[in-house]
Amino acid sequence: MPTAPCFYVKDGNQVVGQIDLNSFPFVIGRARECDYVIDAHDISRQHAQLTFDHQQVILRDLGSTNGTFLNDERIIPNRNYRLRANDVVRFATSTPLIFDDPSTTAQLNVENAINEGLRLDDATAQAYVRGQLVEPPLSPSQILLLQLIICNEGIVVSRDDIRQHVWGGDQRVTDQAIDALISRLRKRLAEIDPDHEYLITRRGFGLVFRNRRPSLANS
Image 1: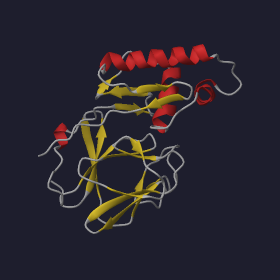
Image 2: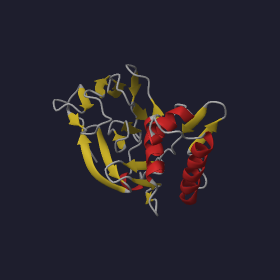
Image 3: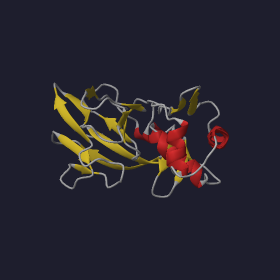
């Protein structure tokens, strides 16, 4: 059990690392001077910051381009959010981090804190649902659609947004083709997790991505 607040780094079902939060402010971003560097194109130079106030760890998005997500909800930039044990934090589309704080009464059981939702590994273009690799692999168009909606989790993505991101602005793509792509992706995700609706259609507006929250477990 850690003696200081920390994040656990997960890859699928496995905890592969630990980030100790020993000093504050603690800045996360792409810039080399950050306390924790995430070298990815969708991470801002100074993406988010953690501070310590009244024995609590506070998360703040620093106006990043692609957002910071707390328990699958995109947080409002430049607003403080108190972290609790078992909270899941994600910066843009990076690997989820599980927060643990020894000062709280409910501690995280690392072995049981598996990623129950959907995760996309940008490096390998592979998708995982509830820790299970989606096989056969998703098509390139499905991967591009996932990248777009995960990055904009909780925000309505329009057909024009999808058309631009998946096919490019110069392509003539019908609404029917976009709907067919969404339908195929929804079906693939439901093959592994039929009890959760990841892609929600807002008729007349667009598509919203809603990830599944991980289970909470006490040690």
